[in-house]
Length: 456
Image (tube, rainbow, N blue to C red):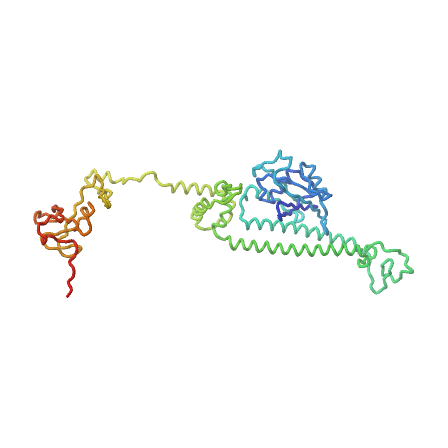
């Protein structure tokens, strides 16, 4: 089946080529097909322009304009194919009654090639898959898709150029004429029958099909050489694109072999509003805060093994995540000990723990809890931080008394007297606060500072 190559320019330096049947299609079918081939146009309003015979860009507004665009398509040199040039612009064409921005409401495209005789042409469009399933694709996957489309376009161009070359070869050769190179060639009829131009009775040669000698006809020879050169150039380009595609696929397999990288596109496509929301300037961006926890749950569920058929497994991702969240939802209140009541009825007492109450000391006053009992400082007999103290009286600096008032520089600190002789029980030791005036004689006063060392 004859095909037409569509060249779509959708941005500065952005060109996409694909093949469609030569039969003119409708405006909506062509627009839907362009959206399938260029995922960035899905869900956007755009218009179509085509290049006419006078090299002017005309806005397509109806099915008649599409038919005119098919008519204005030009033949590709060296092939039987025709190329239709289109251009995309922001906004929309006047005819937008049947267009919907929702990707699910876009008209389903038809099979591009109905004939299955040629394996190159027997390719059904996967637009439905791209529109409904592959909403999000990684940059490397998009590059692979573009290279696959380019390989398909180059393959069709190669087949068309090869067919054109064969037709020229068949046209310029005559199998019924057998060339005998042992005989001389006539300069008028180009036949090798042994006669010359003077006694030639066949007349002037009309073409290579008459003499079977292409070298004697420059115009036909140039056509054949150009067609042969086109086949060689397309073959080189096709091999280069195939090699690039093979390298990109190999790179994808080597770099995207982890569970996260393989499951990410399929998980995002299950709920695009959650994992692929619309961000600033109307552009979508991945929400890694929602993706990482859910992929960790799926990794735990599948035990790190990537499912063989991710398209089928992706249908169960939502159920797996919902079940996990339901099973691991924390209780509202702490469960009680079921045996505690049974043991308490039989006289078993369980310990009750209370929150310890602290005492906060400030520079001006001491703040204690209202319900806390007064703090008692128990004496430690025979020990003083600054040196040994005489018995039976022991003086300890009390933290409660040290910060009650600001003492002048050089004045001794208030002391706490612990007299164990008056109370034999250590648990109820009497505590007296003394100051500098508590002793009549200076000898009875004990300073807080340790004695100075005497020089020998």
